[in-house]
Image: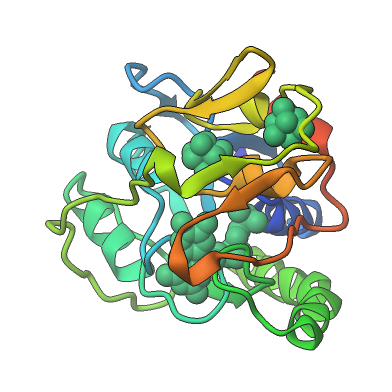
Length: 249
Ligand SMILES: Cc1cc2nc3c(=O)[nH]c(=O)nc-3n(C[C@H](O)[C@H](O)[C@H](O)COP(=O)(O)O)c2cc1C
Ligand code: SF4
Ligand code: SF4
């Protein structure tokens, strides 16, 4: 029995859950980032159990991850599960099932898990409460997968346009920037470049806010109205090295 969990993360919630689920599976396997595989590669998986663990972006799967699933070749009779981390509201699972149906595959199991928000701010007490129960939730999910639980999952529509584009003008760098280049390395799309020791943002941004959240000097100011002034966050058990590894840096 071979298991692969494909994950995508910006601030570590999804990586944390992917790790916890993996370690509680009877056939724990490999964790593979969907954020560092070339867009031109057509990956093939011969795993017997495949998981997709990712955050909700604008209620759906981040387009980086969805494009990965569209390219991924999956052998028949694979047990496929999805775990979505989200802050308030999401409905990505039926859409993911539609993407799989188009390839004659289907989800056997799907779960949404509330985690701290890395976009619109969520009350601190709520974030703490969510972190405190996440390990048990992951164990519960792994136990259901271990029992081969099969759910009936709706097949949504996969026709909606993929989006999430952030404009360069929504990022400003403040004086405390030390030119360390961490913001360039955590970006899944190489969208940040240093020029004269300061970051500049290009046009291909998924809005993951990794550059903002991982800056060691909190030197990035967000100009997008809903998130202006929000505080930095990353999962307490995920470190910068995990994200660098994830991005092949
Ligand atoms: C661009 C963007 C869009 C988001 N959209 C939603 C959303 O529609 N619904 C929601 O509940 N959470 C949303 N979130 C919050 C994340 O889904 C949530 O905090 C997630 O756990 C972050 O996972 P990560 O730490 O693995 O990156 C969004 C976050 C970002 C960065
Ligand atoms: S991570 Fe922060 S301090 Fe480092 S270069 Fe980027 S903005 Fe400057
Ligand atoms: S520029 Fe920042 S917000 Fe945009 S994709 Fe890169 S790390 Fe994420």
